[in-house]
Amino acid sequence: MDKIYLHKCAFYGYHGLFPEETKLGQRFFVDLELELDLQQAGRSDNMEDSINYGAVFETMKEIVEGRPFHLLEALAEAIASKLLLDFSLLHACRVKVDKPDPPIPGHYQGVAVEIYRSRL
Image (tube, rainbow, N blue to C red; front, side, top):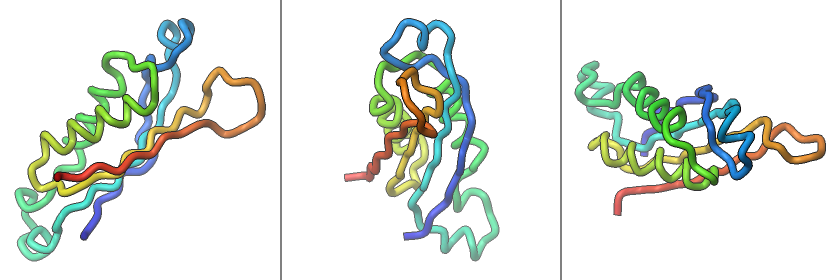
């Protein structure tokens, strides 16, 4: 299967279990791997035969910057579900949500959740 990638899409959201997370907000990064057949798009050079990256980005933005989720798992699931619903050419997607500044004591670069969802 062919793939389209969107890397390190940056958003500001209000997700988390702690009150300060849902009040103050923080940065989130999303990586997407979209699986679809790109052969026709490659031959036709027509956007109708592919998926518009800008529309995908806007869909992610609405979700990440929208209503708060307690868990990264729920946020990733919402993104995957909406992409599969809105983009008919999409066969499957891998969604990675990275939270670089969670309120966890210690030294690390962040926490992340990655899911893979496909049409059944």
